[in-house]
Image 1: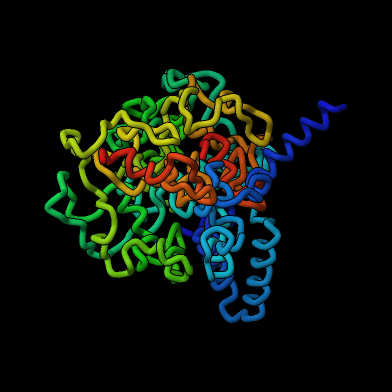
Image 2: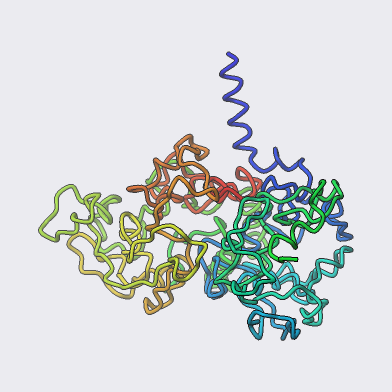
Length: 242
Length: 267
């Protein structure tokens, strides 16, 4: 009998899927469900990232993956940017980071996963323009301004360089065999050998530092941000040999 | 050509829903050009149908092939007015020298001779699993209608009429994004003919189950993801009602947000 109840519980969990885990806090390293990139649950984003928009009603179908990916392109040709992309990409022209201390080659516009992230985080493209929807809500609707990477003006030069080659000959950088706390090597999180947004951020919240901005390694002593003794700037120092 | 009877409607997409509504509207208009009351009645009825999920026939509902999207006996394009079968469009119990059986499953439909661009590691380095250089297994069979290059009525002894390629008859049912049969880029579709290796931490073990209780492994073909891994093409017990013959729903009302995706993907 106990076994039957157990089985029933498991079936219910599988059937209920999302809702079971949804109670979990955002950005806890426990997966996409309930994370700040899960727009399906209607949970106040305030609980996740301090949003002022009241719900996620703009995601009318309430799927998780579809906001970014679709299994079959429907003649929108967004897939050409890879990863079965299904969200509008930014049409802004970006100012990229440049500095004479740079030892890597920076693409003249965002490439790879960065280009995809900028489809929301540029602060100009509507977050609800995806799949068949033409939206109007821009990420600036969220109180947390730190997620507006392009400052709505295409200024990526105030951010860590992205779409930049990881110069393995640079003595200021660690070997690409170095690992993040989520178990990924640097080599694994580079895309075509380049640093992109996803090099530091695990956007699917798979194994991120709990309470952090979806970081692969905590960067602080603050336990509420996934930090601990010895984790001060641990993310930065995974790559930077300082 | 009018909208074929049973054009799938609100099974998947807002766009399709809108199109179905539009098609129904047009039909009604033609029959009853001045019928304002009729239009309101129709609109109300359609709203009710969409809301209740009671779609016009042929959404996947798990009740079997008969009357499903893949039962073509009522379609205009079925080449015989009287000699109609369900299974025969895809399968035949005895090959008649056409040698389509060599692709397996007693296949009886003309196959595509197209060459496709596959979703491989060369396109996306995050796709680390082996992909066949061209579609194999049941995907190859599905593409003999769904790639838009082969007449749907080209099966068994029938030569087929290119008027009835899938893109002409069901404009939203082509896979991938084939309008004319000239664009065979599979990179806009989830990888198919791709091995589901068990040691990828981004994937759940193949022992994970669909809502029907079937394991992922049981829906792989020779260890590979094919069209039939997600789609129960015979509208069998795995097919979740009001989906595109999917083995799991993908919205909260049908089993969970992205439940289909997350059956395999460990995200």
